[in-house]
Length: 558
Image (cartoon, rainbow, N blue to C red; front, side, top):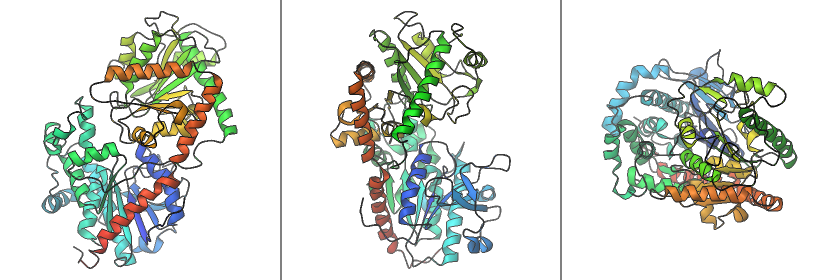
């Protein structure tokens, strides 16, 4: 896609998830990087935390001592702050600086005082990961300052982009110390909005009445919210990932984002049709085998496989809806076996020994105890997903012992070495027939986008950023886009459950030619969400930030 890129001499992007795979932000940055490299070859520098050791080295980082060597040899950094420089092992292989930030803990009280005086950031009520996040982002800010001073970039086009509240202190540091650098701040989900939802409070019906500062005090979120709000207001360009989160920011952070920067997908991410055909066959064989060994009932090859996945947030991610819809399906008398997977990492202890033994044996040895889970948990009595599965009576549901609906909970990260599945999530995705993500709180939603990129139809809700984007295209439905977007609000839970179950049922009973057509529609939707298109939103964000920073070009540094 052709567009007019803004002229940049250097751009830094700081995130806790640079070379540190935790969640969706890793996917955003690691897939966006290649487009940025194509536009600004090696003028892009990602900054992440050096949380690795010799015994536990990063699989995502390759150190390259020659990169930025002149600066590194003369770098002026706070005592106890050190860097390693290399490349991120992703498409585009951008330059990365990993920052050892331990030395900043000794200085945090000084900086907390300065940030209170300058920006009103209340760090007094900090707890948990607040100090660690601030120590890292302050160290990142010091690294950016040092490079800018060494390279004498005052009269150059330089940007510093910070992701999520965890890097907010770094943005404020740059505004204070290096005012000629243009700053961008992206909130991928507001800390207070996520907390409201996580505490079971209705977010959407009452959003116009919520005050972010008041809710932060009520939910003991004062420091994180204060920092996030200050960063949003101080940034030259404030962005978020969807219209649904933009409304949340405007109400709770009291600043409307300057631009929405939706999360894209790389053009060559999904496997080729030949590779996917092979991967699909292997994935289905593995998933059907596990389902069969758990229940002692051999699942036929035409079993329809449905899955949900994501962060372990029972309500926010709609796992509660997924399970209730599975129970509803059992009473709808499907004519085909339905195998439902819940791929959500929890506090797993170890692979189930009895399941491992059954998988290694020939034939069918009968049902295992509690045949709904693949791994032992450290806290089986407190796990919300397992407790709900038990409450609903799986596998023996109201349809009887031979129910056509089976649920399997995989409570671990699918990195290819979990001891049971031994496949990555993407390997498994190729074998699915349908995915369901009935989210309540989902600022964007990579999982449904990943699904359609693999040609797997998906169900999501109007409360997800991806769902809203699909609705904006005017193509809602399996046949139209491979995506069904279900309207969701604070008061229609049971209607959502019914619609999810109905869509599961309808697609599972569809003819093969219909399924093939829906799969093609899904791929076509993914094509429209590639970074080649969505990177234009970031280019506009860069333009906004540079325009603001130009006005400060001659201001003295602190």
